[in-house]
Image (tube, rainbow, N blue to C red):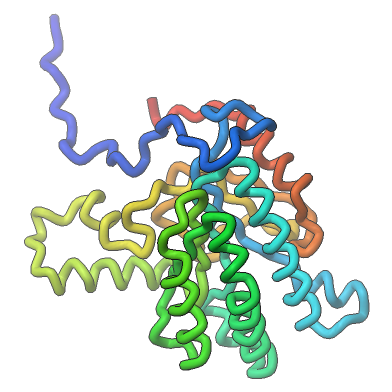
Length: 261
């Protein structure tokens, strides 16, 4: 007996989870074919403090080394043709750390933004912030706003800095935004939520990398990572350089993604 056609949900699968052929940004990547390159790479940069402790250095020195690692990796990601790079720089849970460390992290962010804005513009990098900017100190907000405006025309790579960020907070903010818009309940679907997130308009991450040997998301892009490939490595973040990044890209290219099909 022939079966009746399936009545498929109209909002599944959402377009945000579809795999599309990426458009290389800048020079064609030499490491893997363009179609095997992740469009969006997200990184949980773990291990700065352990790196410093292993060298009998103050923990803030580990964070400074982590900033230098970002600088090197960003240039390499542009060369490789990655279109979107999201870095987990400061979680809302990090407020539980000491005042000295939190203030030090804010200072490093401000200093890095001030010193690197011209370079980011030259490379065609557009900077975006993911998180609650209004909860940050005034000087930090001013530095971030300046970088956001100065790099807004960048087209080679979108750099998302997840700062004062938490995945669950992002979902709360998305729901509040939809409620404020007066969206009827029957119109709240995955596409509506996706459009209310901090990452609205960007592809979901294809590859999530975590350094430092841990294997968890730690409240990072929990909605967007539903179909991401995960890559965990033991290297502490300050030691994660271009070669390690290439290894992650090669591993991604070897995997076969089916998206439930």
